[in-house]
Amino acid sequence: MYQAWRELLFLHWRFPSHALQAILPPGLTLDTFDGQGWLGVVPFFMRNIRPRWSPVVPGISNFLELNLRTYVFDETGRPGVWFLSLDANRKLAVWWARRFFGLPYHHADMTADWNRTTGHVRYSSQRRDAPPRLTCRYEYAAAGPAETAIPGTLEFFLIERYFLFALTPAGLMTGQVHHSPYECSPVDLRHWDEHLIELARLPLPGRRPDHAVVSRGVTVDVFQTQPVSKPE
Image (cartoon, rainbow, N blue to C red):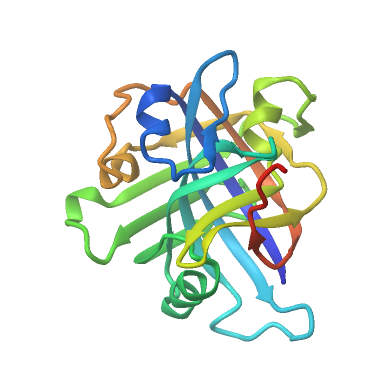
């Protein structure tokens, strides 16, 4: 598939490793940086979603997405992303991702506004089966020049991930994405909350994110999921 991910906000907290490892399926191990686990919240705009052979379809190919994630590696040592949840405002996209990719998508009422002049984003997500008090809201804008992350740094560890894992009825699966490295900027974070973490029934950090950046986005090739192979 072809996708474009636009106006991304990356919020990350240091998080107790044992709490994250406890929610992973067999075959995955928590990936840590300097011995610490990390939990991420990422709201963004999904644009031009389509199979490689299909044109963009109005009303289907563009939607909003908000994901809660951590970082793992499989039994072969391959690093990737484990999604605790993904919210989207297109019911068809939610059904498709659950049915064919085994990803934990939820249907949500979502709105977002991007100011082309200032780059300021206002983003809101209300999961359909959650109480209104757990509406997730974010306001953000770039606060400096954009740069690619340097290998070996925390930012590279958190941002540059090219595999994802999902647990399906057929077992643990992996998918691969390909895109140019993110160009990320410091963020003017005007509003954020921990409601997405609360929806996952995890302990709340109770503090500002330990790492936060924004990116204008990337264009992405998404490849078919495959069973996770075990070492021989």
